[in-house]
Length: 105
Image (cartoon, rainbow, N blue to C red; front, side):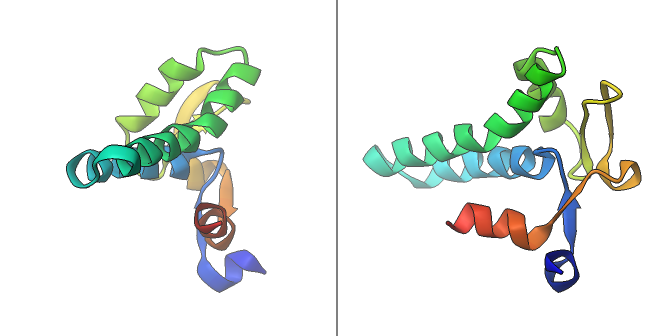
């Protein structure tokens, strides 16, 4: 139902990684002091799901994360195949509403 309402985004933490990269740029250009620190904490937290997925698949999460940051929005890590793939084509998706709600709350 949530996917019907607002659509879908790449799953497996890929959307969060891509958002984190854009957030880092905005945070460092815009915020100062405690707000900057808070923004940097959120940026790191957004990367945690993908790092954990890669770690659970026996991979170095930091390396996978850096590889994903260099790709287009639809790309992410398929832990079952240990490959960087188009998440839409692989069927690894999340409802956009769920991802948005997570960020807002």
